[in-house]
Length: 373
Image 1 (cartoon, helix red, strand yellow):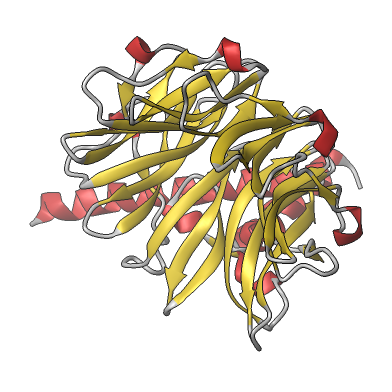
Image 2: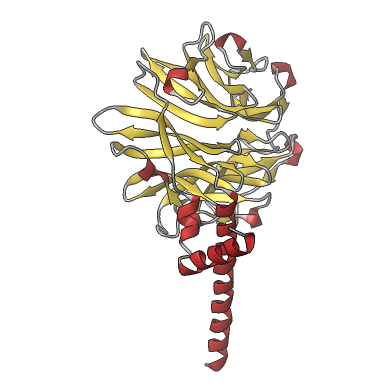
């Protein structure tokens, strides 16, 4: 088919049915259970570079977990002497989390094996955890002088940088892209979504006007995602300032509580609480773009949350966990979808242009109607 004819056909299909671009963008999800053999429960928190991380409960012990796409690939990251551990994030073949050793939770860094464990806990800390990794940085928090302080590391305990902003009573960092860090800080009892650029002094308050509390959970490029409460919790998207805040509450369910946990390539994942169920969710920058991912899980998953998203250019990967019926507990899973072919993206672009033109025409028509009143 010639390019000219393809464009004409594509335009016809989208104009005839503009919803085609939605179905084309969100079809063909493949489900994979990551729950390892013998695990009572498991949770997957992040995905990157062909790896997934989280925690699995085996023989009554929570173990930091690493997968490479299947339940059978499970690797126990728990270091020697740990009575409990969790891996929260993965990037560049490294994983971060926490391990409880000697009764103290210690910020942890791994490179794929339990033996590779690095203790990031700074001297004097009574508690610490690493929750995000990217661009050679690790972020989390450390409790020093009874205050949890947002912290930044570059591979060693001695490298720690204190991100705790002046006047805050508690702060935590959740993610980094190697340049900026996100999390929250408490001021006067108020949780504020936070953005840093490597120092405590660089702190930026992302909480929009009128919000009751807010958190920034993840960062990708110039986008930050998390939660803002405006009477109910709303999945949220920012681009560096409180004024840039976008409410991702599903427009189909305007009073649903929701939260965005991660972002990648213009898409965001998390959950929406719809009809008394937590449903793993996907957005593409707006509330109207909401996709219910729970329909792609096995029927016995009664509730679910999505925590991580990434792509290798071939597939899109989303990790999370769900509550199964029949007393099976919580189990980690991954959804995989092929990246749309170039012609599908063309359809989406044509469709987006069509939708924008129709909206513009409606606005002009509304203005004309007002002038005649």
